[in-house]
Length: 341
Image (cartoon, rainbow, N blue to C red; front, side):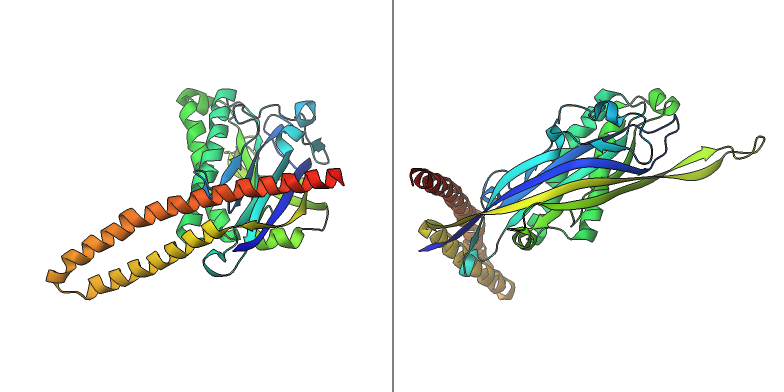
């Protein structure tokens, strides 16, 4: 029984960063950018790493990533973003089907973290950079597994706070107490990462066939510093703002529909659906049963929930992985056929 496989090529290009407002204690700003690209589809969700996270230059701090363009930045400065951290391409595989495989899973986008370079060591910043990928993967994937969907804007903002705290704690653990007290540490200006930069299946489909779509995302932040506003007065807290505009584009090209035999996936999915129904019925019976009857019911429930179900889940994962290989082979065959024609 075949069903329709859809493939989409996603291209994200971060092009430039425009300074709107900046502040730095030592003069004009020296911003640097961390990027992380995220993706998921029906094939990745059946793999050991269900959510793909790509963090370019993960082993580096990010200091100096813009070169001379990132020095002495002031309002109006436009910083080109190098392709090493700004370009992402990925093919997503999805499907259309009724029944137990009706849910469509596609997810793609990026998160950008903008920081201000001051006195924090490159080693400490690099440690925080290495924590960014695992923090994103853990928090977003845990949300997905708990809710069977990707987060909305408010939920993403809550996750950003947790992710930022993990990165901050990692950096802080590498900064000595005396160094942290006496020097001006790097600051996090802000984060680009919400429903405007992270796309679910319906948004990906809506953007397909529209060609390159230019976009802009604001990255804003503020910090409180203490300044002497009067020669002989006491220092008072003053809020200083940062604002940058991230210029980027997205392009989603439908590769085409492929009719691939998927009897194995559907067969396993139906068995898993039936098993979940049986597990639910056993739980209901267990709650209503007397003490003498609960022993056999618990044994049957343990067998189905702890042994049979994990085995079927692994079988379904293998079937999806096989499907990914079939899709790749079918696409290569189409390309070869076109070349011969």
